[in-house]
Structure formats: C-alpha cells, structure tokens
Length: 483
Image (cartoon, rainbow, N blue to C red; front, side):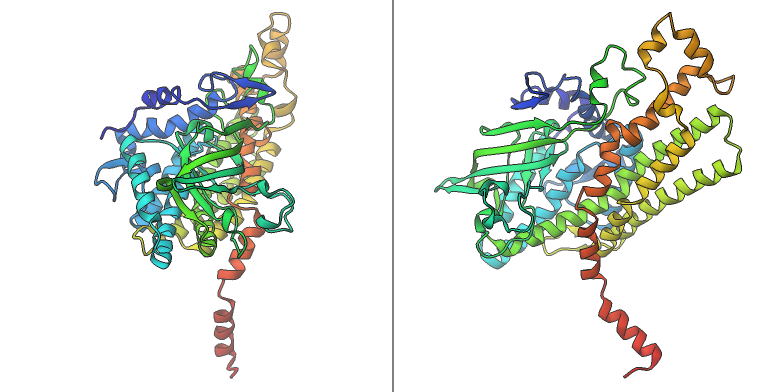
C-alpha cells in the first residue's frame, strides 16, 4: 500500500458527485469553490504532513489490521502512547492551519465504533465487529478520508427520538429488507463532510425501548444516492469571494466548513451496518465517541491557540507596547490557559486503558475535564487577544482601499505603528486576529469549543457520574474518624 499524497487526495475528491447547495445555488465544482476550498486545504494538510519525514512519528502509525504504515487519522489506538501522539499530532495541525482541519471526528468515531461493535457482538451474537473491520481495512488500504456524523437535529429536546412529532428529526431506519436498510433523517454541524470519501454515522444519544429504529450506525459514501448537503453560513465568509481578499480574509489558505446532511431514503447494505436496533449499546457508542472527541480538543484547539498567541505577540510588538508589564502579563495568562488545555489532553491520554476489542480508550473523567476547560479558556484567550490587538483590528480600512492609489498613501501613513514594521504586515496580523476571534476561523475556535463534542452541561453530567463522590466521602470519614 502507498499512502496518498496531498495532490492525489485532492484529485480523488474530484471523482465524488456531492449534491451540495450554498447560498441558494447548486455547487457544481465543490473542490474549487472559493468558499469551500480553504477547508479542503486544511484537510489536505493531514495528508501533506504525513509525507514529511520529520513528522512521521506523529502523522503515521502501524495498523493493527494490516501491519502496514497508515495515516494516524485512520489508526485504531493500540497504546497510551498512541493516544498521546494523537493529541500532539492535533496540536501540530492546529499550528499549521490556524483552523479546524476537520479529520478528528472520523478518527474518534472509528475508535468508538470499533470497541462498541466488539462488545455488541459479544452480548448479542451479531456480526458488526467483522463488518467494521472489513470497512476500516479498506479505509486504511486506500488511505481514505472519513467524516464522523453523530449530531442529529433533535427537534423537541424534551422528547425521545420515537416520540417526536416528526420521526425524521432523529435519523432512523424507515425500511428493512433482506439486503439492508433505508434511512432518513439529518446530521447537523458536519465538519469535514465535503472533504471526505465516506461518512461514519452513529446514534446521537442513549436509546431506550421503543427507539430501536434510531439505534443505527453505518457507513456509506458521502455522495450516496439520496444525500443532500446544505452549507452552513459563517461570519465574514463572502470575503473569500472578493477581488481583494489576500489581507481581509485573515487566513488566506486555510479554513473550515459545516454542512447540514440530509438522508432521504439512503440505502445501507448489511455489511456496512455496525449497530441496528441494539438500543442498550447506543449509549456506549455515544459515550466513547464523546470521550475521544473531548480528548481531541486538548490538541487541536491548543495548536490554534498557539497561532493566536503568536499573532497577539506580534501585534503588540508592531504597536510598540510589548515591554509594558500589563501586556506581558496578559500574554503569560494566554499561554497559561492554552498549556492547561494541553495538559488535560495529555493527562486523559496517559491514563487510557485497553478495551475488550484491544484498542485503547482515554480516561473518560479527565477527557470530560479537558473539554469542560475548552468551553471556557479559548474565550478567555480570544478576549485577551482582542484586548491587546486594539480597536484597529475591527476598524481598519479594507484591502481594496489599501490597494486604491487614491487612498493607499493615507492608510500607509496613518496605520503605521513601529517605524521599522511595514504597515501591510501590521494590517495582516490584525486581520488574522479578527479572523480567529470573530471571523470564519472563530466558528471552529470559539462556538465549536463551546458546543463541539457536547455542550458544557454534557461534560458536567459525565464529571458528576464519574467523579466517584462516594469514595471521596469515605476518605473524609476516615480522616475525621467517623464510623
């Protein structure tokens, strides 16, 4: 097997026939669409860095399924060292793209489905584990990109899936045949879907009796018949289509995307099904995926944070105030917050344990602590970045005005900071901070930090469940000598 190069990966996407709509129009060429392309570039970086010998230890691994070298994003973790390398890899990609590189969800989904199918088969006599191994071996052999899809639109949050007024508000089986099933529903907030060859679908919540048709996990091509895609809107997204967009977009090359994925009677063959009605195992799949993905945020968001801290440090240097004590203190605080996130990601990885299937699961309590911090600290880092960048970050003239001979000299003169720093460089850094804290990249750095892998209350519920409060009470009783 030969792993795909960045160029081969991009060309492989041209073979897909995605049914995508954006801004009210059908997109005929998804790969070269100016709104989508930055997200593809971010995703492609996961292939590009895997080709670089200096990153081989982080970006590749040896497959337990084939014994061959694979991209780590397709790897099934075989040790706590694998879990740690995963977090380090994610930080690296965040540093290189300053955006969501979108591939973590598929990796986290694969590891959750792998161990859950093993235990489902053990209890129910099903054949899901072999189905998944066959599918994932193909993914590794062909070096494919897989999107993980968990989040349903959910409708009335006070009702279970089977009690909704519209049954399609949770993805479900609408027809069963001897050869497979037909599914209908939607998956929301899908990052990476447009840049993936397959989608790996999971239930979105724990299921109960009566929800059997909703306890479904499967894989299918991203361009399967019956799938319609609608691109999500991002702040400042149309800057990507402007004639002068080299400075104003903030991050010219990289970005992210989110799509609403609609399944309208999509056929799933039996050998691509990994859960089908076993409600008692839906919760296990959800909990394990959420744990892996909460671990991921201790890597990817830290890498993006590294770039934001660096941009902020440049901005204060260009303004001539880097030596002020309060400025130094705020940069230190940003670094402290960012490294705390990383420490949690490494901690939950180092305390991982082996599942019955053989792959490794992170420490779920520490993973939830990691993600709980992620719901807060990036916002604090972004606030400090905006504080130090100053108002010019959001009031400076457009690049079109900077390029206009009638106004160029005024902007060049009056936006000057430190004399030795070109005005254009200062404008670029300020636009980068704007992009990361309130533009297109902010989608992946801030709201995604809040809601991705579960909103804050989801982690608090898991922390309460796994915090072993009774044990702590016994410790206190022993010290206080209470019988």
